[in-house]
Every structure is written in C-alpha cells, then in structure tokens.
Length: 119
Length: 108
Image (cartoon, rainbow over all chains, first blue to last red):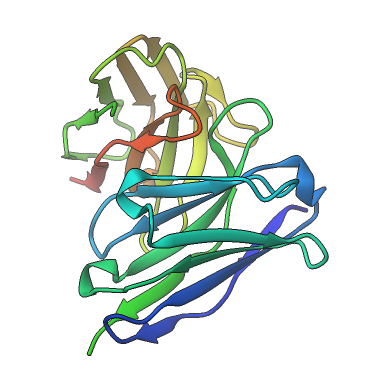
C-alpha cells in the first residue's frame, strides 16, 4: 500500500533552516510528482511547490522562491523540503502529498511534520 | 493568481442533514477542482477530483458538481464522522495550485 512517512517534529530558531523528509513506499517512486503544502496553526492549506522525482526538476510558489529547496534521493525513495531563513510565521505543519497520475491533485498525503520557529 | 473562495466559512448541521458547500474561482478553472476533508490533527483526505469524480472508497453520500468558476460539494445524510473542515483546490494553473480557505462543518 502507498505510504508517505515524514520526519519528526522540529524546533528551530529564527534565521535557521529546516529540512523535512518524506519517504515514499508502495509504488514506483519516479511515477508520481510530489507536492509540499503547509498549514499554519488554525489556518488553511498553502501550496509551497512540487518536485519531479524522475529528474529532480522543481516548481516553487512565488512566495517561497529563494527560501525553499526541494530535492529527492531515488536510492531511498525520499523527497526533501528545506526552508531557510526561518521566521515565526513559518511555524506550521508541513505535508508532502503525492500528485495523482490523472491530474494535479493529491491522492496520498504524509502524516505531517510540525516545525516550530521560536527564539 | 487564481483565488478560490469557499462559502460559508463555517456551518452547523445535524446528523441526517444534507449540506452544500460552495467554492468559487476568480477565473475559470474548467473542471480542475478537487475537494478534501480534514479532521483535527490529520492530513487532508481526497474526496472528489475533476469536480465530480468520487475517489475510490469515499461514501456515495458525498458528491461534487460544477465547472468553470462555480462548484459545490454536497453531503447527504450527514454522519457523525463527516464533521470536519472541507477544502476545495484548483489545479488549472498547473503545476501551481490554490486551495480555498476552508469550510468548518460543526455539529448543531
């Protein structure tokens, strides 16, 4: 069965970076793009970007351009999302989500990773 | 950027009721519209894609309709497990996507 298992919660200081992982299993890793979405406490869902696991190509939301980097490791079927220059407003749950074959929607999600930015 | 606006932002209903949630796009998204359900502390769950196609395993009391700029999610015969927050999502502007702000469905 398809599973997306994310790394554990992180606490970071303002100005630091965080790298969240998402390990995929149960399907052919390179057959599906992977999105990253975040959700601040009590708020809605915010799209951050997408990565093609086949060649590592990416597309980022304009809001995060220059601060976010998405990568993948095909040997471990893991995608990563690194966010730099953290500020308190980046406190959120970060989700990876698999893009469906058929259209640009999420058919599977990771469990989420809470990133807390606090001095 | 395409903006997605859901209404209402919250609503109260009773078990057995029929409820409708609306999602309006700031410009046409054709049928590239999905709906998700999210419960507290959990990841969203896909309910409907391409505006009206029910995801496998989702109960048939959930249905979606619309195209262009106006879409609806209807839940018939509300069950206790349906009380959650619902989000619409457009994917017309692929690869980027946009979510609605969410609709919280509460028990009356």
